Length: 362
Image (cartoon, rainbow, N blue to C red; front, side, top):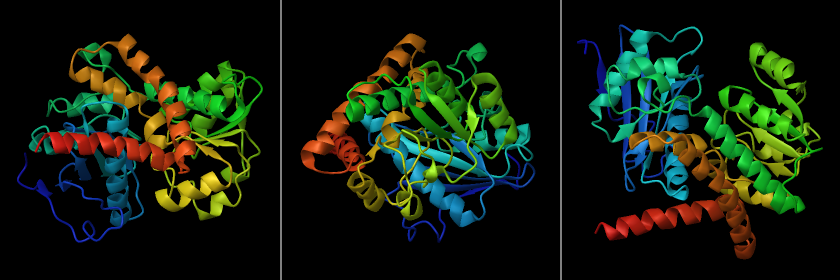
């Protein structure tokens, strides 16, 4: 570790931040030589070590990055809990453009920062981070998953994330329309990165007419050329589709979009899709739109990398990921019975498992 590297554990924008929800630890990381500026958020370790991917994004401000890591790490806590995994919730963000600023030195410096936490946080891939980057991280710490298959790991978790999201969409269709046959349906996939493009593949093969949006033209070209998708130029909420599948960044379900949505189902892989989980979760329900809780249906990647901690079994990971279908139906039924939003129904069930673990440890 160079003399100029440091990790600081307090920041004035943390405790007073509306996104701070009893997080256990927030670590600010800096390495001058590589240009690393990262934040690691550990929300909970009640059920086990906090596992969650690292996102590299060109945030507009440090405050925006802080808010993102707080929201993402908390979401991982509930994702692990509702999936029945013995994991807590954590996440990391690296501030910067992953296409132009990322280097091996930066990723190795980040690996050293993760290692300092002694296993309370385990990292993996997320937006802007690939298995190639993980190869560099693993040189500095053993507290990492999503390791390339040729190195004995489970590889890129995004295909399994997409598969779980697809299972969630099928369950949503079953609940909404009485059949999970998607043939002839229409969907907008917003964001066709590693997860989104695989979801496009699943939906296309199921006979869905797929519209796509993305900020990167090369990803749009891939969706169009490989899967026959159609580019959608308008505001995502104005699209006349059966399913809106957000697979980019969060908070796309907000005051503005809710008044414009023309879809029947919202089910995608993006984290924190509800800008305000209480206000917008209830509003989606009032408007008759079926919302599949993001931390439930995008858990496939977490399930996949979790299995890497023991002995990786691809078939077992896929089997557990397929279970998202049944769990989604159970959450929908529970929400209807209780007269609450689907988000709160999923959150309550996840919290019950966490509370039980806390009580058992006393």
